[in-house]
Length: 500
Image (cartoon, rainbow, N blue to C red; front, top):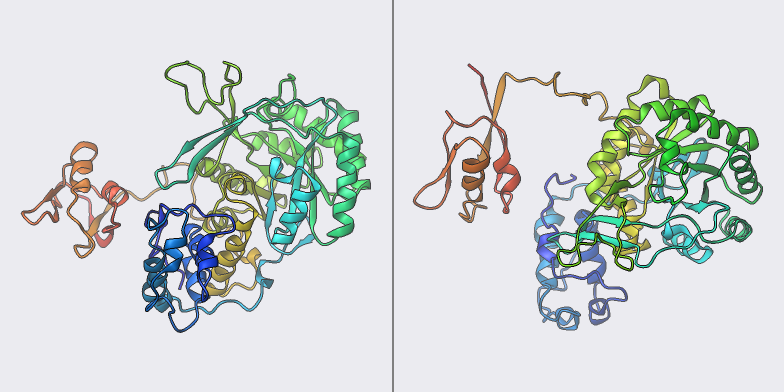
């Protein structure tokens, strides 16, 4: 079965750098430690365990992989693999799927080998990059936005909020559009379609007027694009009236969508900005203009950090900062909310939803599918970890579908929508679910007591053995303690009581 709580998580391998050309693999004659650890990092520990041979070669091994590690002795590779054998493999009931057929889907009727695409950005900006991604297993790419503007990028143009697990929580960019000419980009499309005819090319475009939107769409279709994506959402345009400025005005979305549809015969997706209170007005306008689908979300306007000595926000460009676009796993909750809004809107029924915003693991991807997404686009995770993440995205999702006895990923689309309300007014409020303490996991740190005392309802105290005890008369079932416990030693309990 798919484990709700991973037996191994990122904190267990926090010192692993997820190397390229990893020395640990070269030092091991029996396994590929780096691939196994990478699967753990990307919430795919069950697939990693199922790939292991029956006999554990690590039992009597003196761990040359750990000595070869770039952080010698700091990553418990042997212990992690033993845990895959001892903790994960015995609980993995579903065998590895024989093929990837369950992942087959489509974008507006055009077949895809899986739902994973690169999103429009630097990760899909040259022939070589797209070719390597296709070879790695990505189903297609949304090419970096094509325009007639003279693009000159700033340096530096990225900044980030680091996470305690060694990853990046949120990522900021001030990057704009493709700096190649239209002719150069059309040549790339022709080569990609000639050499990778089964891969999906989604051409992102941005025009400055109706004629230009139409002309760019026509050229993309003639040169091999399978569909076009209208960039109504880039937050970093120096020119006024472009990018997210359009996405905030439904009348402009409708006008430019219609101009594009009249100029081409391939599917058209409108990529909308999250820098609005509600996305439906722009989405409905796109549909009136003839759009076949919606892509969302683009990055969120942000200021990530300010240097405490220079007083300049990051990234600093010659002493100046600027509001930029925020992405990464931190924006996933916002992206999920917008995808759900679009999927639940009756006026948008039948439109394809291509979702993006913080997807790193197959679990992230599945959440978007359950809320109605038909395809998934990824950038920030690729920038951090490389095209190789497609292996775990596909394998984890495929195993889940097999576990649930789904024959197609399309069967999972929208399954979470009926249980989701746009407000909290409809939620049942007459019962309380107490937390359950697992004393065998508890280390007596007292985090639950502190959080409950200072951020909750003073319902937890530590006894003389530093074990948490619950005062049921005070507990309101908020589950703050469940969230803060570093050992995952507190879970929702099964006992419910009726409010008085």
